[in-house]
Image (cartoon, rainbow, N blue to C red; front, top):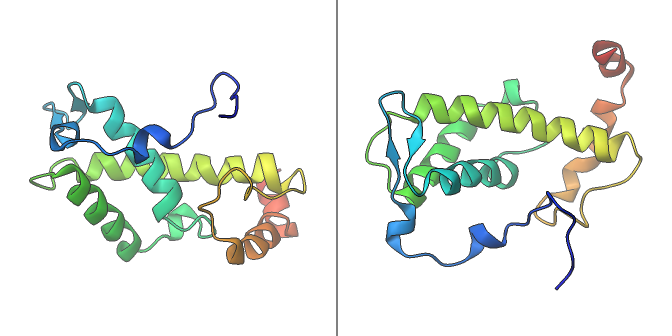
Length: 144
């Protein structure tokens, strides 16, 4: 088992088999997840963003098909009975996706490295296009 630095977490807790009660989630009046599984639900949203949404497409350019597929998977895994929390989940997922892309740029594109050793689930075939976009003169001017 490899040692991790404080603050680094893997996907192990999200990939283990859990019984059906571990995927029961409740929401308050504001559609915020509450109860003993609220943290696990939020963590799953983050993992699903990283593993199910294409990192090479800007968050604002993701299609309805991407979001509906994301929601369908989340809804099936968590046995969500209705679409009440959908809007809030999408808001949270969009922030996570934007931060994820930013992290890829900061830690890997700007450093001239690739993330595939750490994030084995990322698709390699899109990396070159992602790097080209993030190092283009238009992007550099936009950021500065």
